[in-house]
Amino acid sequence: MSIMQFDPYQKNKKIRDVMSPIIVSLESTATASDAAKIMETRNAEAVVVVEDKKLVGIITDRDFTIKIGAHAYPIDTPINRLMSYPLVAIDENAEISNAKRLMEENKIKRLPVIDEGKLLGIVTMKDLNI
Picture 1: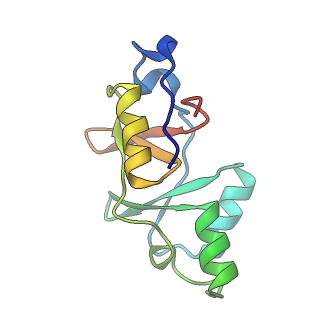
Picture 2: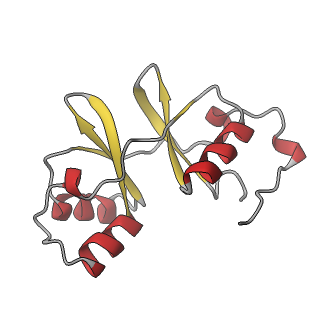
């Protein structure tokens, strides 16, 4: 297991300071094909999955590789069958060290950024210089 390094210049920064405000979301009933098309056109690495206006999961480029490529799920599979869940997200006012800890503990590379349940953006390992 690799230990994530802490950059002292990020000590006082919050998630809102490093997140990308561009995020793609789709209803859980959308198909893998729908998600792939929007990821391609928006140059997104992930789509947050929404169900009844609640954030429920995330589907990433890695999910496509494993679940469609390796497990041969059909391209018309609803994304709620492909998504990673429960959704691990972080508040925009959290400290960067919290994001690093969450990513390490959950073995993930992306965290949706929220404020009172509202999706604001996404923060990635690249954003955190990991």
